[in-house]
Amino acid sequence: MRKYFFLLIVLFTLCCKTDEPASKKDLQALEQRIIHNDSVLKKDLQTLEQRIQCLEEAKAHPPLETPIDKIKKAIIEVKEWAISIQSFSTDYNKYPSFMAESRSEGIYKFCEARLLGPQLFDYKPSVPLDPWGNPYLYWCDKKRSHYLLVCTGSDGKLAFSDKLIEVLQSRMRPLPQEPQIASQCIQDDIIWCDSSHVQWPADNVEDCSKKGDK
Image 1: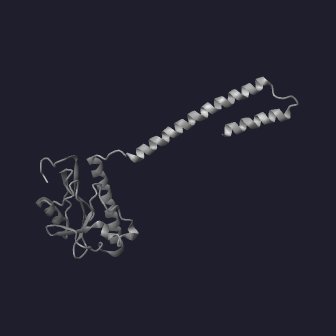
Image 2 (image 1 turned 180 degrees about the horizontal axis):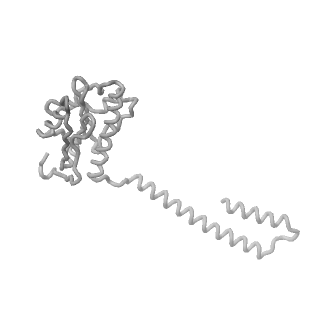
């Protein structure tokens, strides 16, 4: 439209500033320029419409996350939760208080981490659900000096092995050790204890659901 407007101004100027009317040749040349610009404008509009359509299709059908993508995302989100919890601990010298029990595994009784929202309001807590749509889980001891944060993995189940329980107990002793477990299955829990991961999937993680390993 701007091109048309400009060309019309040029034509009007030619007609007004000259004593003689514009020649037929000049008018034909101007007409050809208008036709050419019209064709270019239509192509530009078509290209723009195609790009908009591609963007809308990409938004409507985002690429599917692979199991590995979800694991990486969960590990990052667990760290984000831990940063919020640690910031709370720095200000109050204790971890957030335990809320209503949701699930348990042995001596550990968990609540959904999203219930900590009011306590962590100033610390920008992470998303309430993991990449599989399950809630992150939180546990702390009675003195609020130790805590666990758990992503239940692709199967959404809590499953603490004897080895993992030993590792957790060693973490909570007066002189804590720093053992860690690299799990092999995407179904395994991703667990954070106090200041670092205790268990998370190894690089060669695989789907163990068919093996019944968990």
